Figure 1: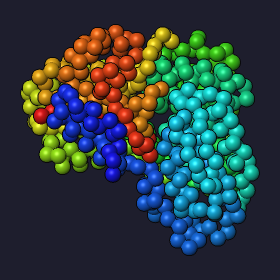
Figure 2: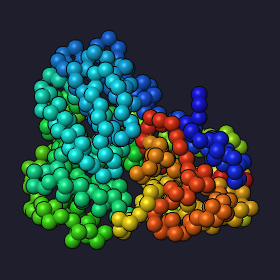
Figure 3: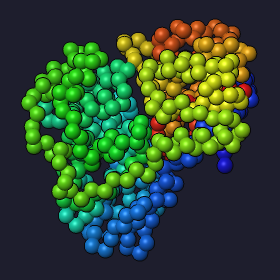
Figure 4: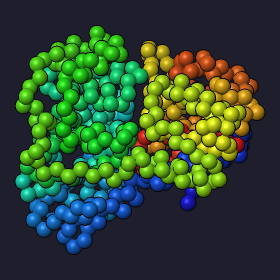
Length: 452
């Protein structure tokens, strides 16, 4: 099998090659361990007329129609595996995927939409999902397929605000440096389908949700937010917008809606009467565990620094290097040869529209090399597991003490490009940007440092 890293050879053609090779081997193995298509095949089987998912069984003999619908960056492999299992039993289906992920399925329709900020195609996708939900009857089964990116790829704003207002608010949140929980809370209170509200539209049909987790701690609430209730209030969304100085920048219609008194009859609030079964077929913890196993197989003492990586990307990268240097120079918290592993999701705060291209993993890796010398036997790799990082076609980057020197040789200033959020320019110029094949997954980001 070809490596998931398309440009592996060019990444190993310079710099600290011994460390680079080990880091790439670790992240490649970790990606393979969280393949969504394979996870569905492993955990979902159809035996006669019984659908078995993990330790649960669902008798399909009295089900009139099976509908499949979903959205997200790992949803296509979920849908492909489901079609392989259920075949013509699927009456109708629809999924929304990120640009560049379009593929052909037999029973489930596929369309592309925008990420990380929704566009009008996202609203079209939301309407398609609601149409299926509304035609599902009491003897039907609706299978929801969700993964990271669902909020942007498929949306239906509340009646009080326009799509443009929701898009503006979403862009403000994405560029604010807020963590994903905060972004999801604000988005959820502006949606007719998030925070479990889609389950209300599907009811009384039975619901099965299959999800690939991309959230720290693998909370079912965020990973199945079409079908899982949420107890936050509009006041929480207001507090978050004010926390990041966005309240007065948010469209007036959004401020007016979020300031209205809360209703006690929110259809997303109570699911006790609904027939819902949620399954997490891929967890972020599987990514971390697989990385650890591979690093140990390579003979490296291994430590997981955190599975809750957060904060400003470049600063998190510098801290990652600080711990790596401590291991190299002081032999703590682990002795070389060693690997340091972290998973989670950092953030990039963009304060104006005058910026180039990059992403949180690219800025993490760039920040990591700021404090490395060319002679340091340390390499840092950071990538988004879906194969794209921010609004770019690269997954992340791998850097070491040679990165800045090679950039200077090409007339590039890493500090200036970080300031402009245009770090992709540098990383592609020095061949440190990572390109992947279709990873068929989307869990948390992963960062690996190898110290020899």
